[in-house]
Amino acid sequence: MQKLQDIAVRVESKDVPLNHSNATPILHEIHHALQRLATQQETTTIDLRAIPFGPGDEEDLLNRLGTGEVQIELDSLGTSKLWETAFSGVWIIDHRNAEGERVALQIEVTRVPEIIQTHPDDVTDSLQLLDNQLNPNRTETSGLREE
Amino acid sequence: MADHMKRFRQTLGESLRERGVSRRGFLKYCTATASMMALPPTMVPAVAAALEKAKRPSVIWLSFQECTGCTESITRSHSPSLENLIFDHISLDYHHTLQVASGDAAEAAREAAMHENEGKYLVVVDGSIPLGNPGFSTIAGISNLQMMEETVAGAAAVIAVGSCAAFGGLPQANPNPTGAASVSDIVHDKPVVNVSGCPPIPTVITGVLAHFLTFGSLPELDALGRPMVFYGQSIHDRCYRRPFYDKGLFAETFDDEGARKGWCLYRLGCKGPMAYNACATTKWNQGVSWPVESGHGCLGCSEPDFWDAGGFYNALSIPDSDIIRNAGIVTAAGVALGAAAGALNRSTRAKAAAKHETVTIDDLDRKS
Image (cartoon, rainbow over all chains, first blue to last red; front, side, top):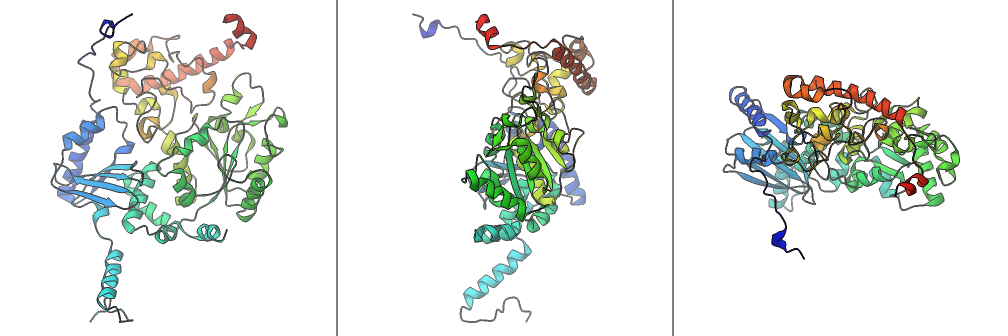
């Protein structure tokens, strides 16, 4: 009977690529987007689901972008993670559904990702909510009145 | 029933708010929906404005000569999930595989949906329609042709899901024993969208439905009636292995050095140059992989007559030209070569059809 060590093992070639070099063009696109943000305050969003990445390309891109000092977790319709990369103004937005499956992966070149900014209507709603809490017996709301 | 009707009358924005979805949640939802529809991220505000007011359309799903692979595919949709699709995007009023009702109750649901939503509902068809004999395929004693004609009569549009409904598919393969026809062979007075593939990518099916929900219209179509956003570019042009094709680096067998290094699968029969689909970007199984990434060439399943195209492992151009050798030299002309290969394949396909030999059970017994 053949022993395990008798079975020939073929050593894979060392030059099998770890990725397909598709991260570099995206980094150039980000470079142009940063230029537009710096000079014209124009924000850019890149949908990575529309990019034909090969095995290893997404990991290569995320590794080359690195991680900066801000990480945010958004808990709405599943958990989304957002983080600023080592390049300030370049954010990764990884949206997941309630089952933890990815529903969108984007790069946003901006000062603060749009989804993080509080919507003006939410500010009005929260003012009303706080007003109700501070004045539980008052029927008329005062928070929205100009005094 | 009252809850169902209330939900049906609600806009998507109202429905989500009633379920406690925040504005950030809604924006996230719109971002995922725009991504699913292959729209640029700049369209997210327009998608949000449209979805806020969108009302779920009634959908009647008819399954004819099919293998249920298309339904299997849509149940694997994750963005949105099938449940979210049914609760948020559409009112799926008839689907004889998924619905609880059966028999007369099921058919009554179809007729009620047609009556209540006259002129507004969508009909999704998977499977081809046999014209040879009405008895080849029936549902509740109604022939496929009769059921489609009476259901389509009051529809806003028809979505032919899968290559069988779009082009005849496997049932129509030579010698086409049932006289299988595609939806567009029969329906000429309604808009027909072909969502081809065997099966189609789940998010492509849901993306087309989401487009109708969002904008109340059908997406732009190519010459074969397929949505341009998903079928506008060839597999070859979007393939991450394309640079190897341009350099003339090909796998010659499925276990050689080239295969291990992920080189181009053109010589192993990949139909990428003549196949138009979104596999290279959308991928399968929640974006995990797709056939070429798994090491197998594209079968071209989203194209008409793919089953009779002359062999999955026959390279498109090898019998007729030395286009491969040229590929290594003329690297910049990759797109033109891809197009040339597609044209050559049509020639190969015609020859294969001419040489086609039918095989009987007796033949197989003799060979074994």
